[in-house]
Image 1 (cartoon, rainbow, N blue to C red):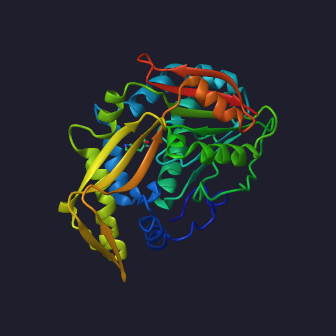
Image 2 (image 1 turned 135 degrees about the vertical axis):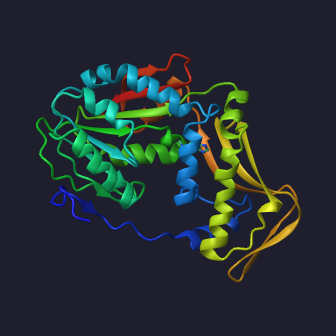
Length: 322
Ligand code: AVI
């Protein structure tokens, strides 16, 4: 595909999926588990988009309200001439709110593993923001330690934009590592603009991850469909069900796939035994109070400058400086 940004496009050739080996390791553990990144094949990503529009799933709506209302204030805090970097940029819907308000940004670096999504989004942004210098990077942002940024920066200030509460899908230790590693790209005064979900009553959280329309159940069950298709697993979908609950002690929503019966499942030549009620842990979504999140980020050397909440106090967008 010939693009107008050929000269600045960076393809760091994300490694092909390690699905089989990671699944064999995960299912051999005492608490069976599969890394949440495998929920997002093409079908999974499409189901996730549906989740974002659900009445029961409040985070996307709440964060958009915050960005719509306060993007001007955020841009003012960031100041003129900044370079915006977005790990896992997807379709780049949320960054548009910010880009509209920023004063004379030096550029935008979206990092996205799905090449097609990245290139489509870049073409759209070029149309919308013809003066913006865009350097799309095709890479798995969780594997990237060094970003070879070559675009010109007027005052050298970089801001990492990480919306969507994706940070909540990392354990607190992984989140600190992520912030520390990406923070190394920043010079003093650089910042992080991060969206993170707030702690709240467990009924609201349960509804958001076990919605009445069954879309999140479909999202979780799609993982088994993927394993049957891609690694020749023998999961009988009738024998598993979606389970989601708020684990208050850990401060996280957990998603599991629960075996309804005692059964054996084969993947390649390995056979896994499931007892009735035994689960595969497929995702954590950590929830933080404002103070907890500021403390977490302080471990990565970040100082909270300001945060913004939606009108129902469900979600928070934070601006930290290094
Ligand atoms: C992508 N991530 C922030 C979502 C979340 O809320 O943790 C993933 C998700 N899983 C089930 N519903 C949404």
